[in-house]
Length: 113
Image 1: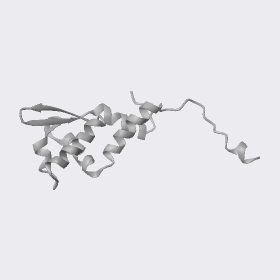
Image 2 (image 1 turned 90 degrees about the horizontal axis):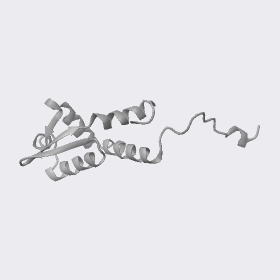
Image 3 (image 1 turned 30 degrees about the vertical axis):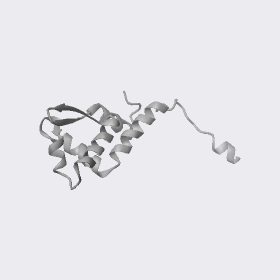
Image 4 (image 1 turned 90 degrees about the vertical axis):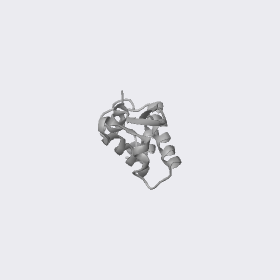
């Protein structure tokens, strides 16, 4: 058997992820690959009612407010959290559907909905 014959892929179904989905998921994985952003995500999810004020988040880190805001912006851009302004403060919530999409890929359960 030649090397060429041994390298023929045995794909029995089309690729699980199209390019657009893979790109969107990669942004989510990249966002949570940072320890500060991963901690922020966990803090928001753990807050009572599933939402946290930015004022509560900044106190949990030895980082400046602008640095925390940057990390929150990255999480929002990746679609992992949402936020809405109430007066002076912004309240953030985790998007369970976005986290579920990342989870499904890791568990090899197929394309996120």
